[in-house]
Image: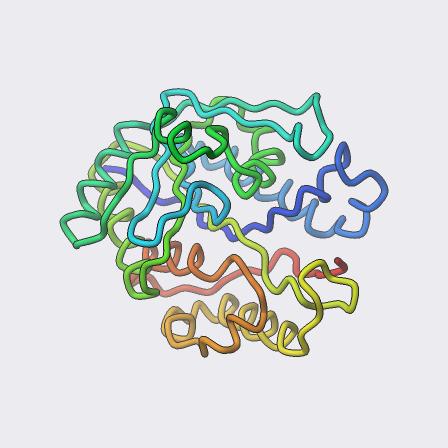
Length: 262
């Protein structure tokens, strides 16, 4: 019987990686240390497979997309770092069980292959939403397997239900697993933010962090849609999946770092 031994929410700005951000990465040193701590915890718990939910892979309106290649590869060449390359074994057996369990609940799953990447004209490699946290985690976890999922345009309730299907799938397989919800909070915190400034961005972030601390899944499910939109975020639906996987557990979140200098 498998177990979820860790559940983490991680940001993914490439600027955190020194080879990309240079001195700018020092502005988020607290978050870098938090990711290094997550890497240490994953190593100590002998995690075998990480299930990572990202917003920046191939996204579909009506279904969750699963990377299906046997070896999952990625790099940061588009960000100017030509020396950073990564490769992970895909936990295909767990992928197949998750898809079966999800479709039992009416959640459509899309097995995204290299041929589909060519058809849609998308990058077949791992996206930066996955690679940024994995850059730090990989340092202490060289042999970790991966399940790479891109969330969808389905309802918030469907994302939560999808998380419950992931939990059932892990229960059915002999794996020590961790789940990572990759996503940034508001992209609109400062006047020079790339997405522009919105005063509600900080309101969203404050609410999000408090809901994590309190383990308030219902609070997440009932969050005001206008607030989510105003924040310009990309973590919300990945977080719903993570919370669904932890359904019926008495949760309290530990905030290792929160900062938004960019």
